[in-house]
Image (cartoon, rainbow, N blue to C red; front, side, top):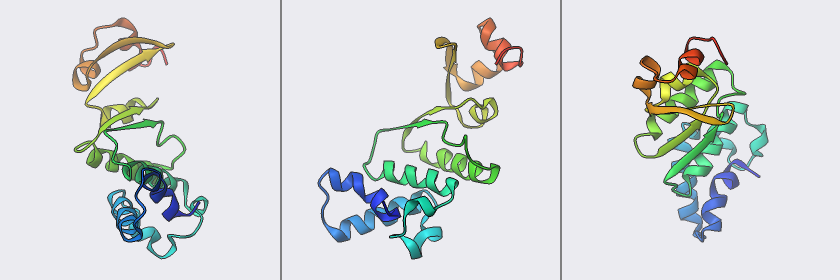
Length: 153
């Protein structure tokens, strides 16, 4: 699909058929993920032509177009170069003002930068959860302490 179709598809499925309204929605969503200026002249080009970092932001634009309550993000920066990952993280900091974001990451540094609340799983078991500052600075569980100090994981 094209860049435009990627963003518009969910809203179209939900019944939005007005071309002007779809155009505006696509523009707004691409702008919210800081992608509009980069793709303005090629909205109908295939989305696979975008860089991986741009594709990640396009996925977020596509999700935002259907006005979700929660964004579920599984390793959203795992395949990105550091600059692209930084852009996506900055975007998450902006989006968390309006959306609940559930972010799965294996990067302890990323979790420390982004999390407000942490759930620590080890071998499929929920070990500890709580406010990020509390879990990172004063973990209650030994496995959490071992993970945070690099003994395990």
